Structure formats: structure tokens, C-alpha cells
Length: 211
Ligand code: DAT
Ligand code: MG
Image (tube, rainbow, N blue to C red; front, side, top):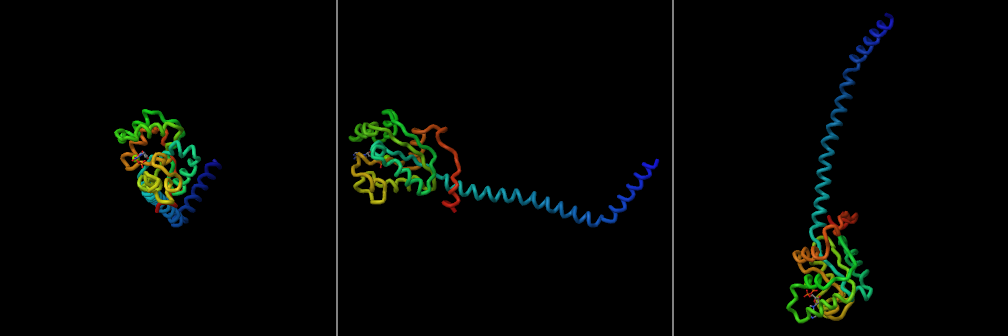
């Protein structure tokens, strides 16, 4: 009995204090609800904003891909690192790279549009004379900029500062290849690489390269 009465007494006390502190309780409750609503609203908004910023950057950075290849003379002359370095330092992102001997069929397909040229057989033979290093680079306007970095097809016409302008002399030994258009880049990438070989990754320097 005494327990019941003690319990009753306790309940009464709690009721009393609740009614005394109700306005403060309500304030705290309102503040908590407002805070919660604020967090609930702010987070998705911030997420949407961040996503949009990232997307804008990604769109710029991932707008284009090009196919660059160091030819057998470039490899033999120890210029592989130099050519990779130029693309890397420019800020382009490496998507794929391999070191291989290219077979005749692959090279005939790669240079298919030049098959009627008198230098075609010599070109394929030269490209089979040693290992090559095909690569995929990504970035804003990378196709056009890549070609500018390579220089003219004939090194004699290539400006100093370009890869061919700095490191080679003759058209038949021009050390590197670069896609000449976005469409041909797509075809060349598909010809030389499987989908699995194109590496998905986020370059940390992107926010410092694209605004
Ligand atoms: P690029 O490699 O600049 O795209 P291209 O596609 O016209 O030039 O030719 C492919 C390669 O063929 C080129 O890098 C070197 C070789 N080549 C082109 N014209 C040549 C020529 N007149 N004599 C010998 N080789 C030539
Ligand atoms: Mg070409």
C-alpha cells in the first residue's frame, strides 16, 4: 500500500513540475524541431550544390579523351618518360596506358585511312620494329591540345617547344602519334583498349585545373 501511495505521490510531483516547466519545455522542443528541420533541409541542398559543382568540374574535365602513342623510335630513344611527363604536367588525366608489340593487323586497322599511300607498308613495318606505348589521356580540349603538343606531322615543320619540334628530325621517325579529331580518338581508343583497361579514377588536382 505504501508503495502505491508513494508511486501516486511521485506521479503527482512529476505532473506538477511538467506543468511548471511547460513553456521552457516547449521552447526547447520548438528549437530542437527547428534545428532538425534546418539540418534536414540544409543537407540535401548542400548535397545538391556540391554535386552540381562537382558535376560542372567533371563535365569540363571529362569532356574529351584522346589516344596518344609513343612509337618504337620514341621508346628506343628513351623519350617515353618525357612524352608522358608533358601530358601529365599539362594537367591532363591518364586513363589508360600499356607497353606492347603491336601486330600487323592492329597497325593496318589503325592506319587504315592511309592504306593507299606509298609510305603505308614502310609505316607499318616501322611501327612493328619495336614496342610501343599506347595511352589514353583525358581533359578539356585534349584532342586539339594534344596535337598542338605533338607538333606537325613533319618534325621539320614543328615548332621548338613541341614534342616533335624538340626531339626528332624526319617524318618517318616522328616518335609519337596523337588522334586528329574527337571521332577518330574514340575509334582509336576502342581499337587499342578494352573497356576494362580504361581506368576510372578521380584526379585530386581537378579543382585546381578547372574553375
Ligand atoms: P599524324 O601522325 O601527324 O596524324 P598522318 O596521320 O598524316 O600524320 O600520318 C600518319 C603517320 O604516317 C605520320 O605520323 C608519319 C607517317 N607519314 C605521313 N606522311 C608521310 C610521308 N609523306 N612520308 C613518310 N611517312 C609519312
Ligand atoms: Mg593521323
